[in-house]
Each structure stands twice: as C-alpha cells, then as structure tokens.
Length: 125
Image (cartoon, rainbow, N blue to C red; front, side, top):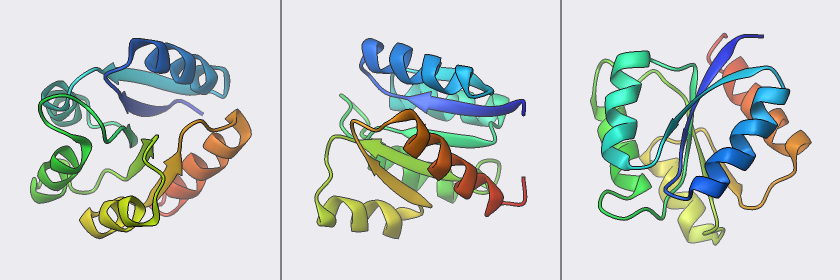
C-alpha cells in the first residue's frame, strides 16, 4: 500500500496506539504532537492523508485545517478529523472547514481504515 498518513494528536499514547494500528494495516505513519509541527510536516512531507485531532494546546485542529486548506502546497491533502468531540456541531464545523470526514474517538481499526480508504479513493489515490 505504502500510503502515508500524518497523524496529529497531542496525546503520545494516542499517537502510538493509532500509529501502530495503521502501520499494521499497511500505512506509513508520520506523527506530529502540535498544530505547528503538523503544518511543517504537511508542507515538507506532503502525506497522502492527514488524521487530525481537534483538541490540542496552542493551535487547535480547526485552525490547522483552515491553514492547510488556504495553503496551495497543502490544500489538496485530504484531512480526516479524529476527535473525542463527537457532537454534530463539531462535525459540521470540521466538514465546513474542509475535512473530508470526521471520526469520533475511540474507533476500531476496521472502521478507521475503511474511512481512510474512502477518503483516499476520493482523491484518486
């Protein structure tokens, strides 16, 4: 498969757990623990997809998403929000900002992989 996913979450345990789940499913994982680092890595590595947490200190996921979508070097990267905030308003806000999907935490491996594959297929990957 060799598709790259930039996993963005300030929680190290989540990064490790989800990163391992996705690696076992054939993805190459890049990880960032802050919004600023995520923006830097997205520009440098141009991953196939970004899995983005919302609740992070400093720059939250919505801000990161808005910057990614406004930047010509990153606006084509599909972003899936992966957050403990699963209210409908949160989901709508993410989709309106440019996310292709929204996955409430926690998620099972099969569900997560299916949503990521659907997001990647939508980009012609």
